[in-house]
Image (cartoon, rainbow, N blue to C red; front, side, top):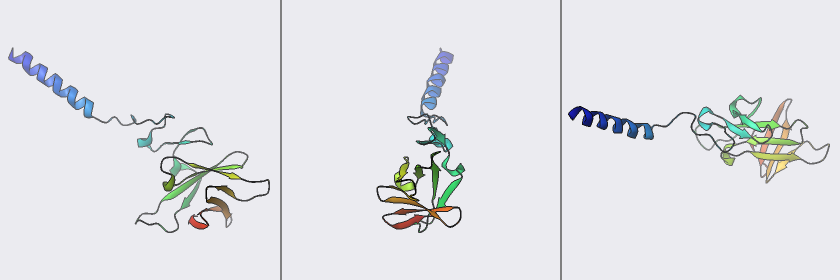
Length: 132
């Protein structure tokens, strides 16, 4: 009887611990991207990506905190759209659109992405450079 009671207590205790344990990779979003592994959904690529692995990264110009944040940029194949991942947008990205064939800027809701120097870009918000 003591053995049965002891085993039952151990079993119930292990179940309680198992229910409180966070499983790494168990935090998939609506698109199946695992946030704890650094993945977020790209609307342009239609796939899970890691923003810190992207080719085009911009650095915050005037960080408000002690650490500088990075913005990632992904272009559509036809270069008509630019997807920007910035901390201000939270977990979502911002899709900027290039107006016209010769326009060199991608815009939406006060955000403007323009070429900068030889191979770089600047991201402006309400006409103030926030990343480059």
